[in-house]
Image (cartoon, rainbow, N blue to C red):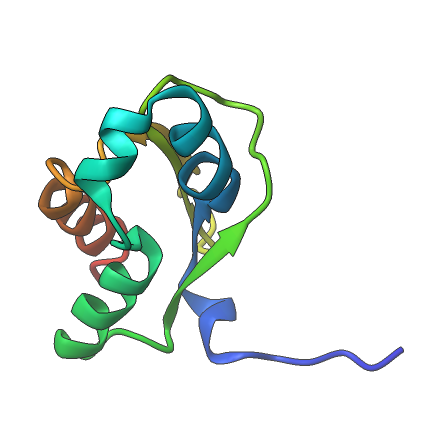
Length: 111
């Protein structure tokens, strides 16, 4: 076993449930899946964080089920690695609420 110290260890991770977007939404709410199309909340967040210059310190990771399921929504967890900062877990509309998710991420990792 080898210990590592990735750049994001000092800031944290954002977890985006892939099961919500890739399985649950298409199966349970096909009308929402059609609206979303091939949009990926994880990829969009990554691009936005790169443009703001904080990608690397903060990583957005697609994950399996977070066991917080809501019809037509995607579960997101912001997990700061700083002492005294709590994780935030919430569900969002991946299109209509993406800007609010981005701002919440930026606020959570503001220095």
